[in-house]
Length: 444
Image (cartoon, rainbow, N blue to C red):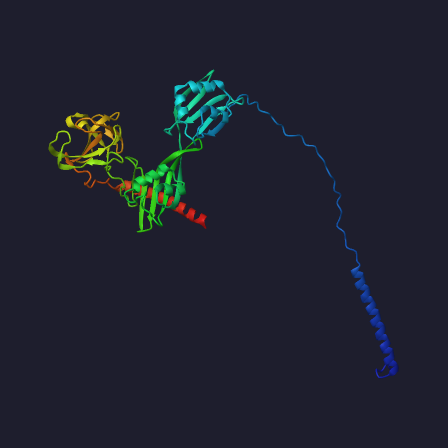
């Protein structure tokens, strides 16, 4: 028989004492073990990354091969703007030209002397010069702004000649406020006088640019600027214009259109022509001294007779313009008219110009003339008490009063030409709108 196992009863004082001692020992050992583990974790060394040995390497590189070019006596391009009071000598000095032979030639050449007298401040003179300051070539713009005077070294001397300039055309857009005068409007927006003149000619009958105050008026313009060798030489044609008047609200528009066949002209947005078939007067800014009349006392003959034209007072030599396209029908001396020029126009219209001092070159029967072309000059030939122009406007060879006649306008575009015009107008309008948007964005 196996004896039963002995057990320690929990309520026994001795057993309780032994049990407490065992638990305290276990707690101490566990605590020491835990502390040892924590300490071991805290002081464990961090592994260092593998070290790399860096070496400094110095290598001497060969310099790039440099070749010095022997330019010899190749010329250098130099430019200088003409200043007020400049002479040829002062220009050459600023251009670095030290060439007595060239200066002697420029002073002795007849055309060179004329060019020297017509130097325009602001124009650009271009030279090709050698390293020692010797002149190889010289270019000077001429007053007509379409030609240059060229001097070139040839052998041991120089030659000079005129040369037509080749222009590069750039389009310029401008917007601004309409001031009291056209010059004020143009000056603030940087518009050249030539473009302001074209604008005035287009809308002069609608706006008095000199007197009217257009409060709130604005304009947008598109025009050409002509460049030669990178320099702006002069303004070209006004391509498009929009003027918005504030009081009363009114919008004026003009677009230039050049058909494949025929003359270019300005048109409104719908294709109606802005130019009249006839100019209102054959002389610019000339006063009327005697109007159209069925009965007038002739100042020389002292008899009462019809005066079938209009007299414009002007000095002898004043240019007389053709009021419309046409063909010269007569150009000779005719009694009291003196030197008389008659031009036949389209349809039943013709015009006559009397008392001329002289006819323009090329004016003879059968010659074709264009509107605005100079066809003669004011004189005092025939029965005239002083220099003036006698101008007649005839319909079916019958004289009528040109000052009261409702002059016909040019025919509007139609058919294929109208379609081409509308496409060209849309392109111009897009450029104008872009200019306005750019200006507004810049103000913001």
